Amino acid sequence: MADEHRWLKYCALFYALGLALHTADHLRRGLDVVTPQVQWAGNLSTALGVAAAVMVVVGHRFGPMLAALTGIPVGLGVAAVHLLPRWSAFSDAFPGAHNTGVTALSWSVVIIEIVGALAMGTVALSILRDQHAAHMST
Image (cartoon, rainbow, N blue to C red; front, side, top):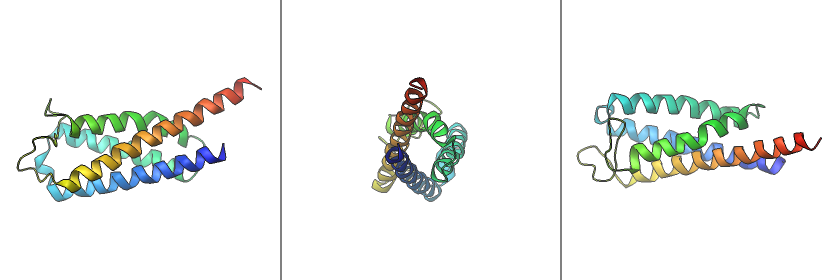
């Protein structure tokens, strides 16, 4: 179990790195290139992601639960916003982006954030499953 918690911390730190770099890239690109919907969704996912990562890193007992509840949805949401072609007001599509400042760096940092969020959520789910199994066997 200690190994899983260590891996969860690594994943949370990797996600936090991607989140920080992705946020910096948005600031570099300018906030005027995204819709208000993308900006609000990004602010909400950032707040949840920071809370989850901090709770995991400090070893809070609810860290795995928050990481499980946020990691996978945030990872999928960021992927939908940035990796799919333009599909709605919730889109800041990198494919076909013109005059929005999207660079290879933008692609790299968003992939780091997505992989980190999905990994954090997946490891957290594994921890919760193991805790549930241990509780059921006692």
